[in-house]
Length: 378
Image (cartoon, rainbow, N blue to C red; front, side, top):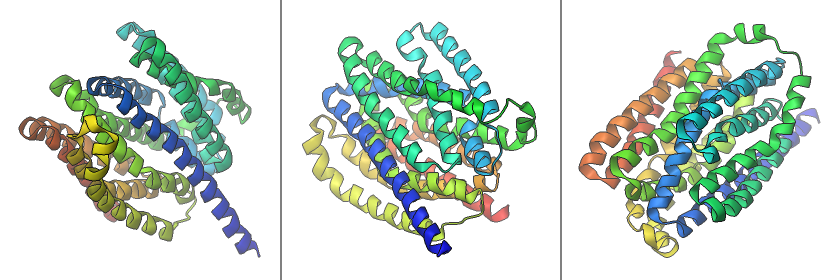
């Protein structure tokens, strides 16, 4: 009877996590695709570039709190108040610095807002409070769309980013709960500094690996090239929703020794199926839905080959972090970044837009291979 109840609860948790994650990402994806339909190609590329800047800056302020909170809160360590305090200080500093550097108030406080929301969300994941996690995630996405559309009419692209910022900042009131979970104790961080530093480094590098292509393509090739690439990347992100759902569920379980092997196996199978569908359906759907982005068809097809290695990378990352082996994860991300930079410079120069897409596939595949090797020798 107890085992049956555990299975029912596991099913409810996975359903709550999966449905909320799918819905929240569906809202975000549909909104991004809607923006592609109403913005000019170069505006869409420029928006991707600006979000890459503020997103990368924000990653530096999390201080590895994402995986730190998920892993140690799941293990019962009262680390929340200490982590929240440090990340708040870091977020305020980074946002002020971004304001001074860019002189653009519309985008400057995006890092602080994302840091606040992220720490709240990862704390909930560590507690395995999947229902509350999903609820806040969906509310944030709805507010994001509303605010972004309102301010788009007023300030254009800057207004979209300002809308994003407000949608995150709404959850600032939840911060106080973290300080009620325990006292600020830096010894908690000191005793776990190796994992936290490696986790911090791997997260920053992971965000860089996601954004570095936009940060390089925009100044090298311009917004008109980045626009179609950005559309292809957004579709790739949509297709990666399932693996991300699974990993957010498995990470706190991997941290406590629960493997979920069948779930991971089916995730890989579905990722393979999605690769095939992407290749087949892109030439049919893109001319109908996005007639301004015909040149993105081959980009989307090529990026589809990244799905399987990217899904396996997420699963391997969950297993390694569950064992507090964040160093191997960081090495894998470094390999991906180096491969992506080299690919963009060389293949982008000689093959143009299609070469940029191949660069993503190569980088994701090499990251996956690296983690497989490191996992075997650990």
